[in-house]
Length: 214
Image: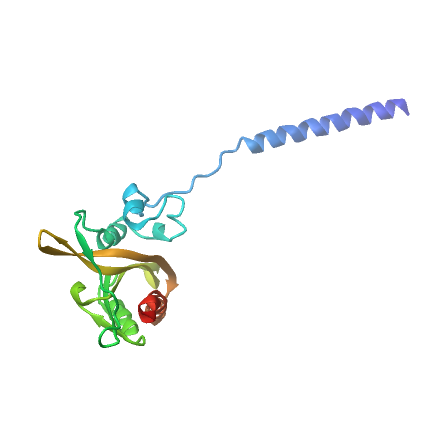
């Protein structure tokens, strides 16, 4: 009985030692790195300064799904005039006609202009809203950047990053310049056709509620 106990003890120790070796080898195995696609949008201090998005929230806002060129286009749309002066903003879109005027701009993957047309149509269908073509006549602005989603070179949908803004004018030395105050920033993914335009219009409908309440 004593001999058998000693043999089992050796065998148990041998098994335990082998297990430790296996775990050590497994722990030493390097983790595969996630490849970064060239041209993909990346966070920068300019993104935080212009859009108010930190590095920690960059992916959560969906901005990492854009190309760097599309991110730059969004920054250009939202960048305020660096000069300072008297800032004048529309008090309300409900005076005197009871209509809210919205400027809509669309950039990115929209070669035919069909997406821009659908977005403008959906926005204009909102109650008490008119789509206008100039900053000077707008109570609110909606800037959209479109990213096409493809599989095997086949379009499966679109992603839209958007920014709402309040058009204002800044007066310096008697000269007025158009500027904007940024509002809501967001992203819609996996949207197809009219669904994308309808989603953006629904978001804007909520964004302009304070104008309707005045």
